[in-house]
Length: 422
Image (tube, rainbow, N blue to C red; front, top):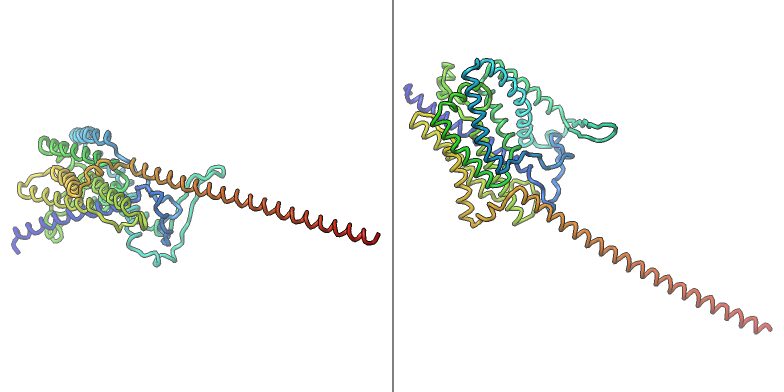
């Protein structure tokens, strides 16, 4: 194999690795975001897990940060301000000192992110039966006997935490690209799980705004590329452009993909996953609400469109040998895939009416119905109690009447006996 063919093959492997690494956190984050949905009142409570890694006493909903349309409008503006500020800082301040601060910050945050992401993976990979021998401990926080909070942990939690800290130290000392990718993937999964869009309208506004943001800062200024190259922190995924050269000669340039090109479209893809669950439960409210076994037409369409959009980005970049704004391709791909799916299924109105508030309204109406049913049952019980009370009262009157008759008869008999004696 000559050097040119070797280089070309290495480049294709790099592109494939980047697409795969981008797809994994989006899929994991989308599935994990299901926990942010409110469990409907008519859904059965989740079964208690036998795994010590699960905290069955916690609420089964995860608290998330919801982005509104106002946030979406401001996102490109704030993002532009932060990006340009970073560009100026790198231009006039020694980047060595800036990267010390960034490394410290992201290392601390990264330890927590890697621990949580690793725990989520272990929950899926290790069957509960294999963990029966693992002891579970509980720490309760209280103030003057008033309960504040609690958390459960096992020896596995400590092992993961120590491994994350060791990885942090290793990354800080070596800046190894594999360690950087582990942090980047963990950040992405956690961000997609914990950030949510309140509606498709908000998602379309966000992706559309960042579509123009990406085009401007990549095509019309050197700012984006300059900051990406100088920013020495795990906020991008890396892969050697020629893996063979890297393995045998330990020297190669790297292909990179910013986490923003994963997280921003990722929270939109996660919204489609939750919408599929919402519509599926609305049509057929059976089984466990948190189950992943339900039709996913919107998620499949949007997730596939994201992958195709990313492949298109790398293809254009490869052909023109120039950096490409990924959201130039990813934003239209994600938006159009959802709109086309809704149009084909005749659900355009339902799509734009869906909001996080609708879930809350559904929950409230279901609780209201449940309360009405409970009140009706209570009223029926009260009526039955009154009827039972009435029957008992009547029975007592009858018994009393019978007793009085018996007493009267006995008195008559006594009088007759006395008369006979006389």
